[in-house]
Length: 472
Image (cartoon, one colour):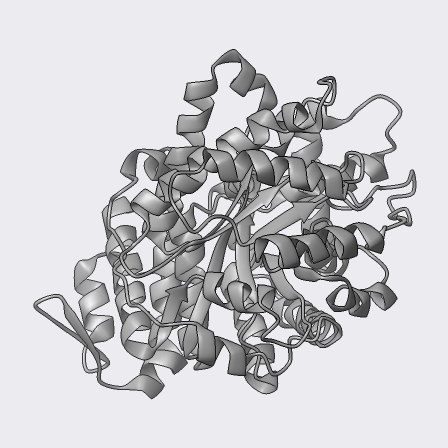
């Protein structure tokens, strides 16, 4: 069992003869002991210590060890440009949102990657997930990098901000304030090592407007503003991979004409290049799936022609990698090999792995989580919903307040084995086995430091959230 270190002295004692720090330069003295023992204590301290300054120091140490070890936060942009040029085989990069047990789940992703020479895979967390899982970007990045060290993974590590989404209500009340909020989150994420950012103002599309370009106006305008901002703050030598979105997930299906209208406005508006590398579209799915009264998930009719046709234009006309599929982890397994065949360059997977966690969690613990959700999120229990539907939609709310309990479950290994098996199956279907040759060829490893305390106010605010279930 890992130890949560209490102060800098204990951290230094733990690092003694394993990692040296001299004049800010970190050297690894005993890689075996680092991976076997020490990295566990460091990540548990970074996540669960009550001392903000100690957490920041340990996150910094983890990042510097990762740099020295060779697990480097990177942008997938250059690989995606090669995909757009047709220089790779057809594959669909899995982008996995890890909502709980992040360190251990990331370890299982790296295990699968090492076994199968996978380079193209992304660890991501959405704006909404950052809030309800209690994982600020710096913590999430630290968990992923610590997992890479633990498993011996060396190479580019793609960490992504997913759905950095504009609130339609807040935007139309005060556009500059909402834009600034997205900028602030993006700055925090980039400082933590997120060199892949998906901007999502698709919530601002106005279908009441007459022309497609007018409908997409606030979407392309803010995607362009965020592109310019990201290019201003990105580290030297790195072009952050930027994703855009034309169809709000759960809404109507996207069309080629909408995409071209968006791109026309976007390319006329941006002032800094390069622009986006991929485009998210709506194909008929919904985040998390659609729960039926018994809590099972309804079958969805997914239109692969949307991915294929928009993806073809994205590649041939604009040089992008292709289309991005959201809300996919609850789809039937037999569909997944179709994504690489239909110009889908990236697929986002979240709820399916959360479902495995809840399906296999001990009943007593699960009921404790459910009771907490029923007491604290009654407003999400809409009229006509069964208890099963409500809990399926809202149980993600139990990830943050019970974070420590998830990390220390008695049957954690059983859950992780099931998740690893699912990774292996999906990654094979998505044809990413053997993609390490592409990341080796196209991704330049550039070591960047963790910026300590760069977002203290927002991180401190997140840490100060007091919920009874989070007492551990």
